[in-house]
Image (tube, rainbow, N blue to C red; front, side):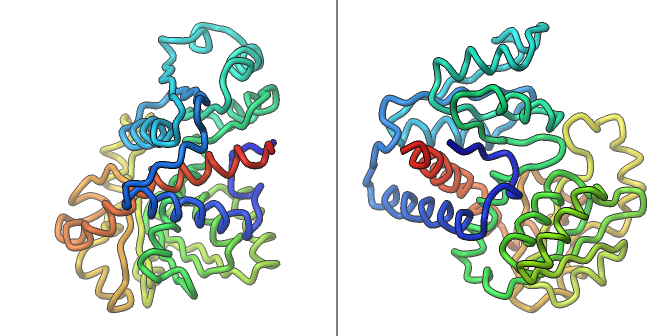
Length: 307
């Protein structure tokens, strides 16, 4: 049995296998073919952080695979009312076939997985967002910019940045990260990524100049400047991130046919201009749709590991 907590725990071959399964499932879906690979199975979805894309994609995906998904918020279970994580894990994993958790502290999902009898999927923590990166890389594959990719991440050194670092380190492509001073990536995650990168041949560079990072890039990506739980910091962050909005002038520094990605929700005229987002709307919303297909591929892959 395997859990999906971070990309660090997966080989390059395993990541690509998950993507390939997702692409095959997507192809079948577009042809009107539904293969109920998870028939009569149940996915427990624990949300301590709300989300549009995560809930819709996992719930829809489980239904299309022949299973059923349960939405569980803090108000629905005792986890939010003092029950130890290990007890909640033991109970839920004795009744369900898989668990997806979207929460704050990464240690919470690690403890849940330690006591779970079934695969646990990280739907987002404050440290990592690996399911989003599966969708992002699937989109890169579909648009033909996965080989020899040069990815520029412009923005906060957050869970998305950490997951991009792990993906680049595992797959061996170049990643340039530009953050404002004081918003750099976690030093431990950076150190771990650099160790893996030395083996894969990946090039990971961190800096504070977005123009330097984006120069000649084939993929440009960013994220909201104030994530969930950081609402009180929003005004200060807008000031601190001045010069980090991905606009037309910034995109002109990238490769001529560079693609723009955004995990959404997007705050126009903050981290990205209206013109850039709308100019790349097809790929951004293809990327959003790929959350469904990539996560179906992941759930099928995890189920197959159990034999």
